[in-house]
Length: 241
Image 1 (spheres, one colour):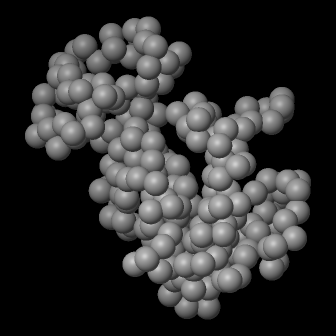
Image 2 (tube, rainbow, N blue to C red; image 1 turned 135 degrees about the vertical axis):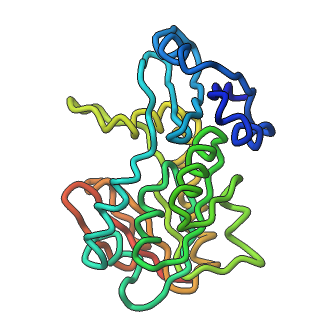
Image 3 (tube, rainbow, N blue to C red; image 1 turned 180 degrees about the horizontal axis):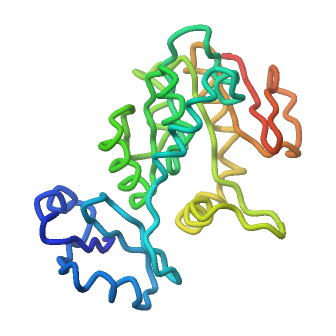
């Protein structure tokens, strides 16, 4: 189970996480010592600001960036993400099947979509769940996204943004993406093999389209109907079967 260090004032809130976490109460004065200590596994810290992630080799907490969602939502329906998902053609019920830290799913929710996000990494899901409790815009589910891509589920849009193995680049990705990659290593290795199956399942249960986020220079997929391109990424759009 994931260690969860919490401050005394957060005891009641921490107890709601008992099914998934090992609860460890610490005083505020001991928090600095915890941050400076060496550790071999990721831990969670619950304070007055909510859940924070403390990764091995780091001495400060990482929190999901709520402001980033707010900034991205200002781009509205003109963003590549919004266009790829068919906005502003009407209200959309969207399954964000590979939620990660939830930036894209939350952004779609701010644009008026009803979004269900699915994440199968327990620690990532707990952080995402905490973010949703603060913003209150989406439904967050824990489990295998394939379980949500068949009867009785039907969605207007299936959105797929799987974590792929890293490429050799001089510049490092953002801290959040680095942490997400470290936490999702096994899923990243399997993403290339699983993605075609997810697209196939999605096309059978999506009413309008399946949207796959890829690197701009990734190989083309002849099965996609069209693409929406950004500066460094693109969205491949597939129509229902």
